[in-house]
Length: 160
Image 1 (cartoon, rainbow, N blue to C red):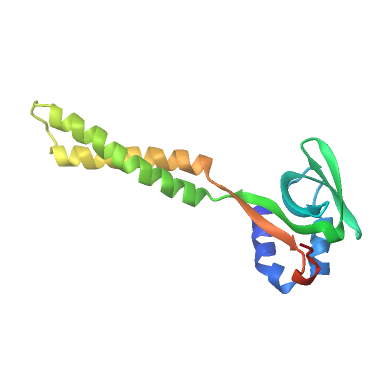
Image 2: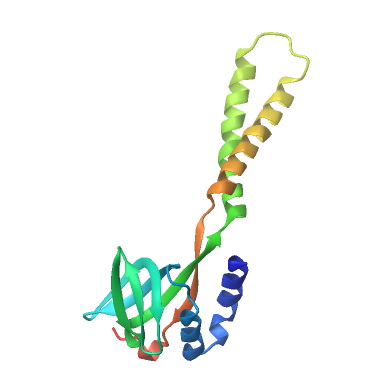
């Protein structure tokens, strides 16, 4: 459900004004993992942390166990981690596993001089598919974490 909400928000962010986007930040749960880009002492910084609180005037983020209070004008961009791309991870795992399976089963068939009931090519194909499937399952579990932007400051208000 969170992934669906994050995806919906990512699609609608360009349609929302800065105030509506800031309202979305107020809905973050305390402790939710976020990525934030902000200015502090005239320098642009980025950090991974947890949402702590958000008001009309600013927000507080917990970074490395310490609370960081930021004025709204200093917040440039905020994103939440929207889940994992399981299909991409599975595809990458299968692409890595297929040549490994072909090499393993190809070498095994090439070194074996015994008479087989099945053609050596069939053994290589089935072995390749098997190892590719194992790679896909591993990739499915690992996946890649995606960030979904919730807030981006208007270009005119971003100080350099």
